[in-house]
Length: 487
Image 1 (cartoon, helix red, strand yellow):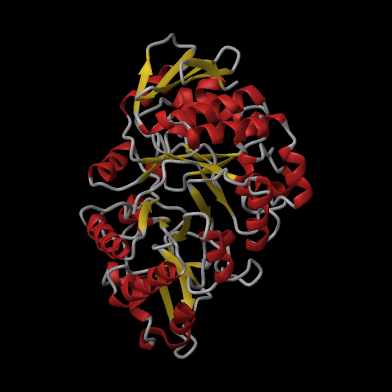
Image 2 (cartoon, helix red, strand yellow; image 1 turned 135 degrees about the vertical axis):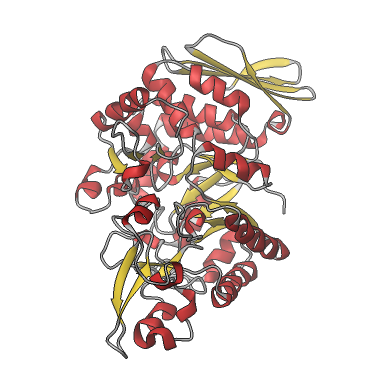
């Protein structure tokens, strides 16, 4: 399928008004014809944790959010992207519950990665564990089987509880493959056009490796899934937080990917008033990417910026963000921290707050994103120029709640009246409609306190100039024979 080169919205199913019906109504009333690139609806499925990312199934919609009919209603107007957590599924799913009851005799037993599948003696060495790129203190959880009383050690990459709510899937299992196919067929039947493969980098477990993006096995799995998805007219988007060498390989192998470098280099340019790194980056990056500044997680640092930014520069940006109310996600694995102890995985906070709630800086940052080649995505909190939700973050074990505020209708109406939001909507419309964005991109020479970007196609031309001394953006474009300013 062809992906529209226009702006997409990222939102939870309940974040704009409370459910999928209200999401439809909010889009129709307040943002009609704004998100021509489509909607990425974060997991609307029944889930036992991680705000939807521990799904029980992909065959149902969580009743509190609505029904598949509500999804199809949105799909009548928008290209819809949904997540498929190919690495894991909920402990409460029928599959793992059957395993918890019957153990190795369960018809679903082969779906899960018991420790002996990777280490036949069930005794990995400390050295092997230290090689693994961990997202929690250890990669396993122990569960007692009801029928036998035996304790099984099962791979669980993610989860904030012990034992974890998120059980890793064995993607080599024919049972797993059939179930993944069933999920994709259901997506197709409900007119889903794009699927983000969340946490796909963790699917291959191999002794003696980091168990993260293990080659060539990862490409064998991706190739299998891509071929089946394309047969259903579904495009896939691997979600991989990794150093740039892995991201480059994804591009070389023809996959869409996320630009997880852009959020930091844009933020740094405003915080330190220097565009040198951003300018150099924009001159050399692949264009087949989805761009974002904010999302339901945070601004990526390790491993996305490995070998690209020195620790002293990272610390400077991190410290400013923490001063502005942000919080940090840290790396667990000692081996994957920097040599000097720097261990920041992501900076968490709303992008508007990280830019000190400066309207000029925020609009300039969005302008840079929209002028950067790729498919732009705007997170719902960013759409409304939301500020850090410190109350929710402080009252939760998950610091990401700082950027996951749910807006009711009154809050949406109030946010829309803000000048910064009105400017952002005007900018989104321009990015969607001006023809030069389907033409040729160029980074123009400038000094280290400015950025100059240009798009041109036929008689259409637009240019962005950002002055990092005062955070102002100027957009000029040709309309007929006239040179006009957007703002």
